[in-house]
Image (cartoon, rainbow, N blue to C red; front, side):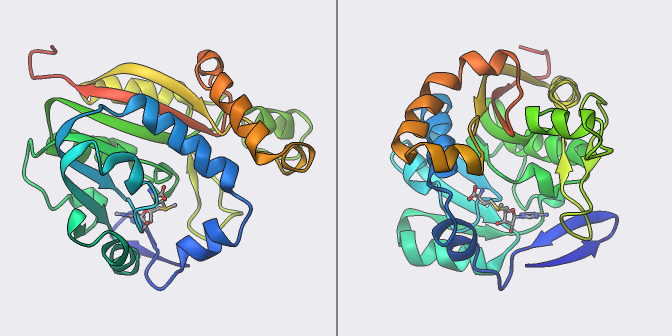
Length: 257
Ligand SMILES: C[S@@+](CC[C@H](N)C(=O)[O-])C[C@H]1O[C@@H](n2cnc3c(N)ncnc32)[C@H](O)[C@@H]1O
């Protein structure tokens, strides 16, 4: 994977990186994949007219929305990812390449949208949310996954002085030790305030990938972990301690309805 800077913004460039094979197929991530799918099945509307998967990569999650939308677009920065998506789904999808900070879509285009496993790449979530809001119709639904700063493991690492990142501090964190430009994590309070400022209302919240741990993966079969995950996503959403927090948002119209 290569990383490059564009203006002040970080772009995590997946061109030439086999994300599907390296991150999903060759790694033990069946549980995480299923955890994402469970949340999307629950939160995404059953019927949509014009839908876009933002930073959708090679269309890993396409099977979760193809039958729910009349028109499907996968948007991503990486031509490699989009070519893989096109190869697999052909005419069932359109693809669009671009940068999230300047979405190549007209105002009020979509009535449904998801963005999963992408916020950790974005330094300026205010600009990202304003772009997502711009291209969504009033009343349109956005299902967004946010990389959580305030997780239980991060709390323990902080308390036991293994990390200087204070998970209770509401400012976004930038984990530079993971790569040169950093991975951004967001505190639930920070991101929820931002959603409101950007004219979104939160309709539902789920806590996702609650059991993401190598130790638990060794102790339990994937099937068992997925069952536990299914039961835990809603109740644990009230504490928001998981690495992924999913939000179902609606874009309000200008009058705030
Ligand atoms: C971790 S992958 C997630 C892909 C997909 N959403 C999934 O869950 O499988 C992150 C994706 O974000 C895309 N991306 C990163 N920075 C971007 C940017 N500035 N604009 C558009 N896409 C971007 C990458 O190309 C990559 O496909």
